[in-house]
Length: 265
Image (tube, rainbow, N blue to C red; front, side, top):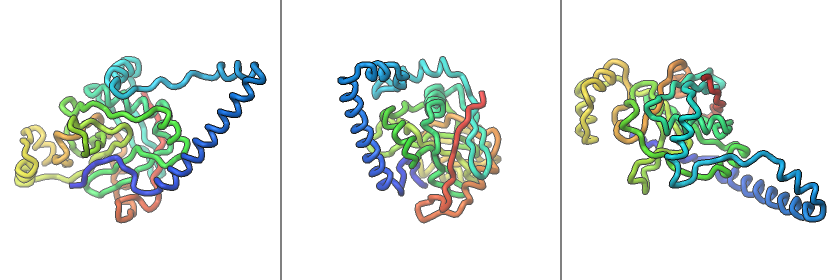
């Protein structure tokens, strides 16, 4: 079974260097502005008039931040726009922290110009990371954090489920990634196949879940690890089309599938 981590496998070195250059330019620009401000106080007043910096979750305060954010941001539907068509997601109220994190990323352009960077037919498509320099700069300003697990509150990994990836290293609480998510395609299972999953992964699949995996399909080995926080309500044919894009040896599509997000309600 493929581990669902959130690393990007290529283009990173080039963009990392670009990021360093960009940040260096910004640092130089800031120095020049400060020097000018000393000489011309009116410029300093103009800087103060700029919009306040984005309020962001801090490490250790993620849950309280998103608990509050969830109360003030009630939307549940998001559209992922791609060159192959649109995918509409329905976010679960039962997983408020993950729903709030996803909305926070969309509303603050942290999901702008992201890509589906890993596609595997009959398994899943994974997206949310970005090589885009402006998006990377915005994310740097937000800072890094992990999302507390809500796996016991969400759904199962049936076909169309939307879940957050996570790192498997040094993550005993199995917290979710900040940006990387995936959409399940999976396959249909027989009773014998589900029995084999239970034996290999050492957990029981409830009867209600077994019926879903036999009739609709999915990827039951992922249950009990990742938080499922939504479902595809429209566009599973687009998900299938993305999964069947030509890909390299690392499952990266040969032709990038860029994602732009739009909140419906």
